[in-house]
View 1: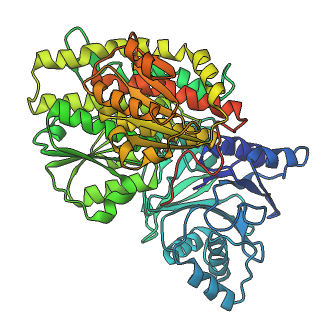
View 2: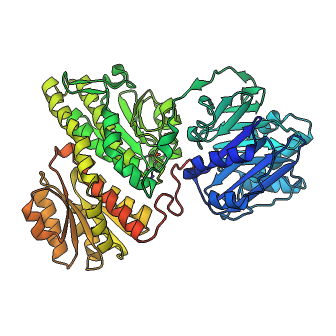
View 3: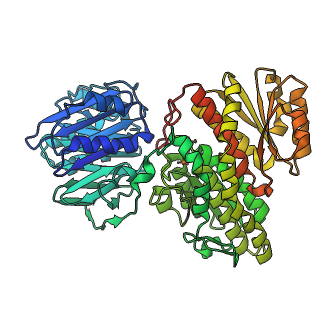
Length: 613
Ligand code: AGP
């Protein structure tokens, strides 16, 4: 997946595009490029492997001049991340320039066909095909918009594209097919910006139009026109105004966004609760979920990917324990291929920080097709998941820039908990008193999480002692099993250490063979109903010379006899305890990664939002 941007208007396009790309870099950062067109049709293309910073440095003092341009930050799918494969791409005559996010499924045949018609390809990418197809269409006398429309009709798959042509200075076009990342159009005074998502646009204008699947846009200083890709017919849609706080994107005093975002968790949790829970009257109000949507639900399916899947896994415990409904979770990338059994009595809850993850969106499409009800738990206002769902519970975390999800995980757990409380209330599985018992402990969560984040130095000291290990095993049971997975995911993502998360009961069925003094075990062993079982696991590890770090309940003396090191968390109701146990695991991963000199905010091979399948 990639970040794409286009600008047309009266300002110098190059600096504006670089600034927009900085805000899109979380989508991919293995190469970057831009193309600038001046009023006389002169085109300059500059692109480079590596991060955007390298491109920006190489352009210092020699920024291409012109008021129309496109830019791209890449996460490679076809072709290695090198200078040639970096976007923008153009046809062999250098007439059309495109930036693309998506995968062209039929690219081999298309490429062969174009080659047979005399086209020469400069890169290994599938994206270049679009430029060649458009160049052919322009050669037949079509307009730029019509050329893009015809090219989009030929390529298969899900895409977002922005393009311009030498023969059409002062014009850019964009199109979106499927769910390979969205396309948003910012409409300013005699200018327009088209980009993959809102953060790239909002510093320039707050008036935006979202492009839906199967739509395209033609933009120039005189305004923007939306059209149907299928028919070319004009679409009427007025721009909406969206709120934005540019200060929140700054790192502030923190060394990394990941650290900043971990520290922001108390506030993110508070904001996710704010206005939704009245702790005096014990009222629960979810503004984005109409109560009728929850009436008559008989089964719940929770889907997501990565960290959001781990939140969904915790969510299943909420549904079963609080609403007493059958519940299951599924990896969104598996869900749609197993022909899931769904109907209008099933509530599908899609968890996604970005609301743009292709697999999660595809799972939602499948759920919609089969008539299920759909609620999104999401952080990004106006994202595709939120527009697709019947109801939304926003996590209100503000922008999460670090590729590694942290504050959006804990806030997603809070949002899921509230949603399930509303579901339980709607089906009268709980009375007012029980609702009060569930909601009251939430008031203390921001404080408890805040106390844990203050122990960053303790986690750092422990992390330094363990930074040289190559393998870790994370164990948890019940509601802590997803936290074991999440702890292991954090460690792998940012430190590149191999880490496995397992349900602790599974340990003796295989992973125990790995345990020795070189394989530290992180055991989440709280004083809850599963404590005895976790004690057995820790004893089994000790008996094999394993080193144990326990995440344990404050005041538990027994755990100190078993574990070599302990990360304490305060006592809390079992259902809320994952929001606490994950905090030391996030910090542990962060400090190990920093110690090992890793690029914490932009780990290798990753992207914040995965908009390809
Ligand atoms: C976790 O740190 C990663 N950022 C990744 O696993 C992420 O949770 C996953 O790609 C899903 O993204 P989403 O929440 O935006 O849908």
